[in-house]
Amino acid sequence: MCLGIPLQLLQINGIAGLAEGPDGPELVDLSLLPDARVGDWVLGFLGTGREILTPDQARKITAALEGLATLMAGGGLGAAFADLEAREPALPPHLQAAQAAGLTTG
Picture (cartoon, rainbow, N blue to C red):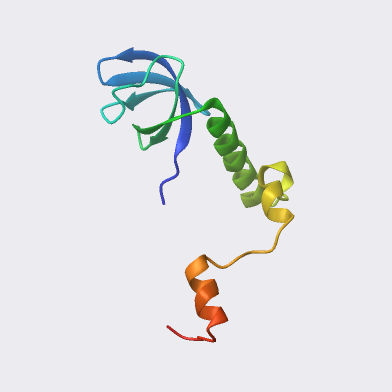
């Protein structure tokens, strides 16, 4: 599985960027993000920037990743997944329709 990590761009040199990530500075390929600018947050996958993020999106993703790390270490959901603790899981609309029609198998 590959997780996207929010990275903040510190420098850009052509299609290469130097970005600050959770483990310190790292190089990121910006070939897919020609509009990226120094200071932007990008979503990085295996050294490649795939999407420009708003600061709020970067904060939420970072909080979710920190929450996931806490869960994997045996901790609780905490504030990172507060939206999940307060609701019941819901089926996607197409499965809700199938359930309402009485279908039990595909």
